[in-house]
Length: 234
Image (tube, rainbow, N blue to C red):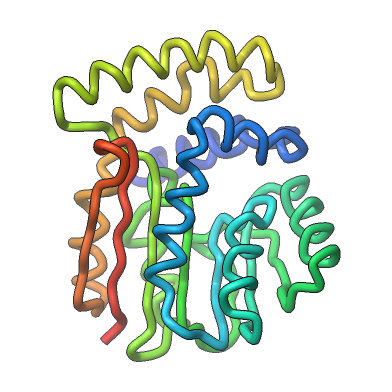
């Protein structure tokens, strides 16, 4: 498969997964992660140093932006997402909570950014993007000494944990497609298949080093059901 075909396939997955799911996103991500999404978000926040300007890639409905704003009340936050109905909810959230934030409709791999950021965070984007393309686009906008924090699902390597993970995903897909029909593409084993196939947890550290990042760390979370990577721009 050519690189162009791979890019088209990724964009096709995103465009089929998310349009029309904005209103139920917060409920779905919390319920079907068994509440672990909140724990994973806190793991992101812990890696964010004091920052005056933060980029939230794949900002979605603004869950991470809100969490960051509470912890860094003076920071300017810029959210980027590819799905417009999510950004509608994002706008409502930042206005409701009087958050100092702005948002951009665009693809993280080629979105046009202005200025420098102290921190870049993203929850659930790594499995959808090409690490080299993403970092080539955003690295010039991270100041020296700035931090990047990436989080997403991973496939447990432990046989016992993977057995539980497989059984749970089977149940989740069966129930999810019935309770939330707008999520059909996701619960039709689409997300499960993508998590099995992605190698983001291995490829991102290599690309981070290639793009001039140091102090690269990665940790598995929740018996390997998720992972977090953070690094410092040299």
